[in-house]
Image 1: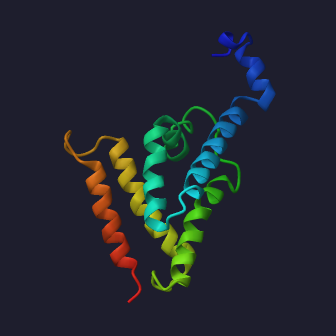
Image 2: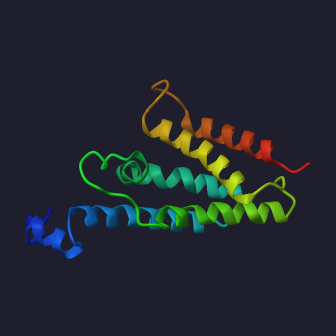
Length: 156
């Protein structure tokens, strides 16, 4: 791609300080975009979880780079400190809001957010890896899982 832009690969790397820094910037940008897509979901937890699935389906390669560790075998590339945490903030804010409204059970916000995130992340990762039957209805699976997650954390 660098030649198409009229430059060399080494010139592009030098703009970022090296290959590792360039790839870190790409991953950081991915986390920022991912966070922004969740911030745009203003309809509560269910809309947030729908946004969580929509973004990776639209940005599959970037999502795999962010969460799959695919680059680690080739170059030292980790998100900048806080990049992944910033991406999780909308989830934590939504959980805290739902707890304040009496919708979700009272428990440490970070623990609830990480537990729910793990479930939706796992489902999205399975879908992207094309696990299961070739005709799997992932939208239905995801919807059913969201209902189960919501019931499991609903305040009584």
